[in-house]
Amino acid sequence: MNYYIKTYGCQMNVHESEKIANILVELGYQECTDMSTADIIVFNTCCIRGTAEDKIKAHIGEVKHIKKANPNLIVAVCGCMSQQEGVAQSLLNRFPFINIVLGTTNLHLLKERIAQVKNSKRYANTDYCHHAELESYRTSTPNGWVNIIYGCNNYCTYCIVPHVRGREQSRQEDNIVDEVTQLLENGYKEITLLGQNVNSYGKDLNDGSSFAGLLNRLAELPYRYRLRFITSHPKDLSDEVIDAIARHDNICKSIHLPVQSGSTDILRRMNRRYTREDYIALVDRIRASIPNVGITSDIMVGFPNETEQDFFDTLDLVNRVRFSSLFCFIYSRRKGTPAYSMDNQVSIEVKRDRIKRLITTQNIITNQVSQEYHGKVYEILVEDRNDKYDNTYCGRTDCGRLVNFGCDTDLIGQFVNVRIRKSASATLWGDLVMDG
Ligand code: SAH
Ligand code: SF4
Ligand code: F3S
Image (cartoon, rainbow, N blue to C red; front, top):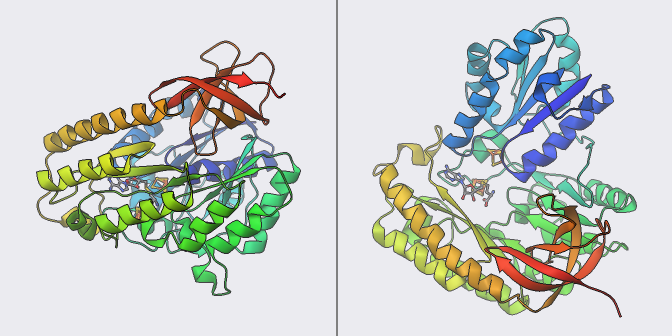
């Protein structure tokens, strides 16, 4: 019996697909790479932007002919898209071949539902539940993802995530430490802690747990490994967290700190709860405490009411802060969010023009920042082979830069030193530096 999981969206979903895979493996399925040979297909969905949803619906539609050829095929849809108001039912109506729909907190039901489908019924469960502690089937060595907090309480006015992921739920600190220890025992060399806003970790537990406390505890585990985390909300990144990163060599000097806009007025309309000046001051504090830190960000253009002046403020912030890389998005109206019904929505032409200018501005900075690496030696954790080139491997610096280098032995999972020779946009190329 074969399974095929198609994952969309953020790292949270990538990791949740590992939990889905574990359920399927326990049921005796094995992974296949060709969807048409699957006995069960799971779509782990995202609805952050309209474009994501359109693409997923088109992909689900393509399963129709596979189901025709194999009527016993089980089709399941889970993740953020299914959790939206009314969507589970509309998916079942539109795609009669879907057997199971599960919301973001219902994964623990998958096993039972698969058994029931075999009696030919169709199921949809999207009621919010407490997150179960589920095991993961991981193939991502040397990097392991570990969830520390689910959901989000921030309610940024454009964002669907709090509506589909529910309120914040932190995992117990001991459970996290046990999971990380287990991974390190099994040879994992890098752990990435996941949450929509990791800095909120522990607040809902009311037992004194905090993100800084968790970082300090994990960083002191007696293993040679690297610790990363995503994502940080600028309003919650505390001095204690900055201090924890600065003090521990094994906490990566890399912070993803989405700013969203460089205009204080737009930030207020987005309910981000910081100003442009707060953000710039925070970046200055981080850089003063953590030399060589890599700061990356997300920015959205075309939020309702964004004027040309607001957009200039964004470009100006980008030029001042000089992110090591930047994810740029066109604002997408999400039903059920406050920004959906705001006046002065921006036209698609203006949005496209602004994103082009933003990307051009960042590309110049990315190239300049990359050149600063040339000639220097960095420690890289070798993560994978780069199949596009012969005898080429890749990994990251601790500040998060992707580095390719030539090598004819498999060094995946090892820490090596690489001297940077050239760069292409955000990607660096280098040569192994031998010890001694
Ligand atoms: N929790 C993370 C972000 C999760 S979504 C945080 O708060 O930083 C990832 C990114 O998608 C966001 O940072 C934002 O830039 C973008 N995004 C979210 N909602 C969007 C929307 N409606 N339209 C376009 N981009 C959006
Ligand atoms: Fe969305 Fe804002 Fe929460 Fe991030 S912090 S998930 S952008 S509501
Ligand atoms: Fe998408 Fe859900 Fe992540 S909407 S970005 S998969 S939290």
